[in-house]
Length: 146
Image (tube, rainbow, N blue to C red):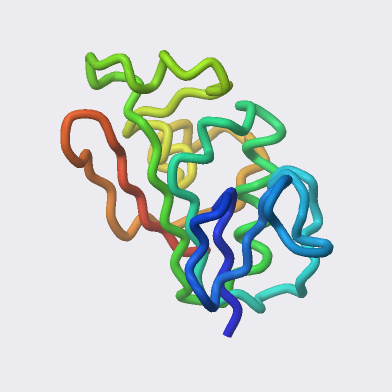
């Protein structure tokens, strides 16, 4: 079963494919928002993005990543995202000059439809399995395609 680490840099665990513009191998050496990814529909058993989604611009690039993840994940497979919490009152989300999008807990409710449920942003529907703030500045979200 295929597992994908988005933006894993040099820290990817054995058995995971690294979708990374500098450290990915072959067709996986690309920015995550460059879609489609080189795998078929419903072929991926797990996906994670740890402190990389804030480096993907908000709007169409972010939607491209989420919709592509939705396409490739098997039914019931989990996508785990960790991002700095922009509303935590700490500097973490804003200090890094390479952060080009900002996240708060409510950002994930646009994915599962509990916020702006009657608007069409072009987001494929997700089910939130877990959503919490960890420590003083990190949001952990786990979701699965609906």
